Image (cartoon, rainbow, N blue to C red; front, side):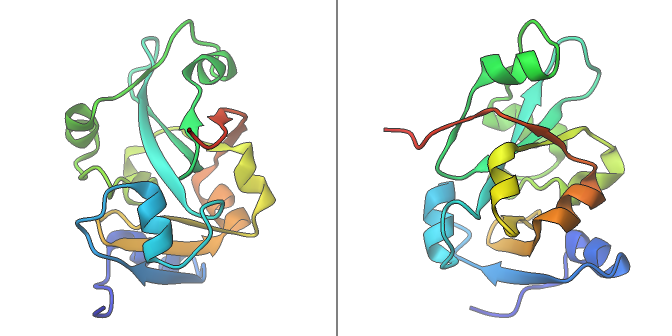
Length: 163
Protein backbone atom coordinates (compact mmCIF):
# COMPACT_ATOMS: atom_id res chain seq x y z
CA UNK A 1 0.00 0.00 0.00
CA UNK A 2 1.21 3.54 -0.68
CA UNK A 3 2.10 5.83 2.18
CA UNK A 4 -0.89 7.59 3.76
CA UNK A 5 -1.51 11.11 2.57
CA UNK A 6 -1.53 13.65 5.38
CA UNK A 7 -5.07 14.13 6.71
CA UNK A 8 -6.37 16.80 9.09
CA UNK A 9 -6.70 14.19 11.84
CA UNK A 10 -2.97 13.46 11.49
CA UNK A 11 -2.14 17.16 11.55
CA UNK A 12 -4.19 17.54 14.73
CA UNK A 13 -2.32 14.71 16.45
CA UNK A 14 1.04 16.07 15.32
CA UNK A 15 0.14 19.59 16.52
CA UNK A 16 -0.58 18.11 19.96
CA UNK A 17 2.59 15.95 19.87
CA UNK A 18 0.50 12.78 20.10
CA UNK A 19 2.27 9.80 18.53
CA UNK A 20 0.24 7.70 16.11
CA UNK A 21 0.64 5.05 13.47
CA UNK A 22 -1.30 5.17 10.19
CA UNK A 23 -2.54 1.87 8.76
CA UNK A 24 -3.76 1.57 5.18
CA UNK A 25 -6.35 -0.82 3.77
CA UNK A 26 -8.48 -1.16 0.64
CA UNK A 27 -11.02 1.70 0.83
CA UNK A 28 -13.66 -0.56 -0.72
CA UNK A 29 -13.85 -2.44 2.61
CA UNK A 30 -16.66 -0.99 4.71
CA UNK A 31 -17.23 -3.70 7.31
CA UNK A 32 -15.38 -2.79 10.52
CA UNK A 33 -14.34 -6.37 11.32
CA UNK A 34 -12.90 -6.74 7.82
CA UNK A 35 -11.01 -3.48 8.36
CA UNK A 36 -9.47 -4.95 11.54
CA UNK A 37 -8.32 -7.99 9.58
CA UNK A 38 -7.02 -5.83 6.73
CA UNK A 39 -4.88 -3.68 9.04
CA UNK A 40 -3.67 -6.77 10.93
CA UNK A 41 -4.94 -5.79 14.36
CA UNK A 42 -7.26 -7.54 16.83
CA UNK A 43 -10.94 -6.57 16.68
CA UNK A 44 -10.91 -5.44 20.33
CA UNK A 45 -8.48 -2.62 19.37
CA UNK A 46 -10.32 -1.43 16.25
CA UNK A 47 -13.26 0.85 17.03
CA UNK A 48 -16.00 2.08 14.75
CA UNK A 49 -17.55 5.54 15.03
CA UNK A 50 -21.33 5.75 15.00
CA UNK A 51 -23.43 8.89 14.64
CA UNK A 52 -26.36 8.93 17.06
CA UNK A 53 -29.17 11.45 17.08
CA UNK A 54 -30.71 12.58 20.36
CA UNK A 55 -34.04 14.45 20.22
CA UNK A 56 -33.20 16.86 23.04
CA UNK A 57 -29.77 17.85 21.65
CA UNK A 58 -29.05 20.19 18.78
CA UNK A 59 -26.14 18.08 17.57
CA UNK A 60 -25.72 14.34 17.23
CA UNK A 61 -23.21 12.51 19.40
CA UNK A 62 -20.41 10.20 18.28
CA UNK A 63 -20.08 6.78 19.88
CA UNK A 64 -16.91 4.69 19.57
CA UNK A 65 -17.24 0.98 20.14
CA UNK A 66 -15.32 -2.18 19.25
CA UNK A 67 -15.78 -3.22 15.64
CA UNK A 68 -17.15 -6.64 16.61
CA UNK A 69 -19.88 -5.23 18.87
CA UNK A 70 -23.28 -3.65 18.36
CA UNK A 71 -24.60 -0.48 19.96
CA UNK A 72 -27.23 -0.93 22.66
CA UNK A 73 -29.41 2.14 22.03
CA UNK A 74 -31.43 1.67 25.22
CA UNK A 75 -28.31 1.72 27.44
CA UNK A 76 -26.95 4.70 25.51
CA UNK A 77 -30.21 6.61 26.02
CA UNK A 78 -30.01 5.87 29.75
CA UNK A 79 -26.36 6.97 29.91
CA UNK A 80 -27.22 10.24 28.15
CA UNK A 81 -30.40 10.78 30.21
CA UNK A 82 -32.50 10.67 27.04
CA UNK A 83 -35.85 8.97 26.55
CA UNK A 84 -34.78 7.64 23.17
CA UNK A 85 -31.84 7.87 20.77
CA UNK A 86 -31.50 6.71 17.19
CA UNK A 87 -28.60 5.61 15.04
CA UNK A 88 -28.37 7.94 12.07
CA UNK A 89 -28.92 6.12 8.77
CA UNK A 90 -25.83 6.08 6.52
CA UNK A 91 -26.99 8.89 4.22
CA UNK A 92 -27.91 11.12 7.17
CA UNK A 93 -24.63 10.34 9.00
CA UNK A 94 -22.72 11.39 5.88
CA UNK A 95 -24.74 14.59 5.53
CA UNK A 96 -24.29 15.50 9.22
CA UNK A 97 -20.55 14.82 9.32
CA UNK A 98 -19.46 15.62 5.78
CA UNK A 99 -17.57 12.30 5.83
CA UNK A 100 -18.27 8.99 4.10
CA UNK A 101 -19.48 6.02 6.14
CA UNK A 102 -16.42 3.92 6.82
CA UNK A 103 -14.38 7.09 7.18
CA UNK A 104 -16.29 8.91 9.92
CA UNK A 105 -13.82 9.96 12.59
CA UNK A 106 -14.17 11.90 15.84
CA UNK A 107 -10.67 13.26 15.16
CA UNK A 108 -11.82 14.73 11.85
CA UNK A 109 -14.81 16.35 13.55
CA UNK A 110 -13.03 18.06 16.47
CA UNK A 111 -13.92 21.53 15.17
CA UNK A 112 -17.62 20.64 15.21
CA UNK A 113 -17.33 20.12 19.00
CA UNK A 114 -19.65 17.13 19.14
CA UNK A 115 -19.88 15.10 22.32
CA UNK A 116 -17.90 11.88 21.97
CA UNK A 117 -18.52 8.73 23.97
CA UNK A 118 -16.19 5.75 24.20
CA UNK A 119 -17.54 2.36 25.18
CA UNK A 120 -15.87 1.19 28.38
CA UNK A 121 -14.28 -1.72 26.51
CA UNK A 122 -11.87 0.85 25.14
CA UNK A 123 -10.43 1.26 28.62
CA UNK A 124 -9.18 -2.33 28.44
CA UNK A 125 -6.80 -1.66 25.54
CA UNK A 126 -3.63 0.43 25.69
CA UNK A 127 -3.93 1.43 22.03
CA UNK A 128 -7.03 2.14 20.03
CA UNK A 129 -7.52 2.19 16.27
CA UNK A 130 -10.06 4.55 14.71
CA UNK A 131 -10.74 5.99 11.30
CA UNK A 132 -8.54 8.85 10.19
CA UNK A 133 -11.49 10.55 8.50
CA UNK A 134 -11.14 8.87 5.13
CA UNK A 135 -11.93 5.35 4.00
CA UNK A 136 -8.75 3.34 3.65
CA UNK A 137 -6.83 4.92 6.54
CA UNK A 138 -6.93 4.01 10.22
CA UNK A 139 -4.96 5.62 13.02
CA UNK A 140 -3.54 3.73 16.00
CA UNK A 141 -2.79 5.78 19.10
CA UNK A 142 -2.76 5.47 22.87
CA UNK A 143 -6.28 5.18 24.24
CA UNK A 144 -5.48 7.66 27.03
CA UNK A 145 -4.33 10.24 24.44
CA UNK A 146 -7.57 9.84 22.48
CA UNK A 147 -9.71 10.23 25.61
CA UNK A 148 -7.79 13.33 26.70
CA UNK A 149 -7.87 14.94 23.27
CA UNK A 150 -11.57 14.35 22.62
CA UNK A 151 -12.83 14.61 26.20
CA UNK A 152 -14.61 11.30 25.76
CA UNK A 153 -17.34 10.26 28.12
CA UNK A 154 -17.00 6.60 29.09
CA UNK A 155 -20.19 4.55 28.71
CA UNK A 156 -21.23 0.90 28.80
CA UNK A 157 -23.17 0.63 25.54
CA UNK A 158 -21.63 -2.21 23.50
CA UNK A 159 -23.29 -5.57 23.25
CA UNK A 160 -21.08 -8.58 22.59
CA UNK A 161 -20.09 -9.78 19.20
CA UNK A 162 -23.18 -10.15 17.03
CA UNK A 163 -24.24 -13.66 16.03
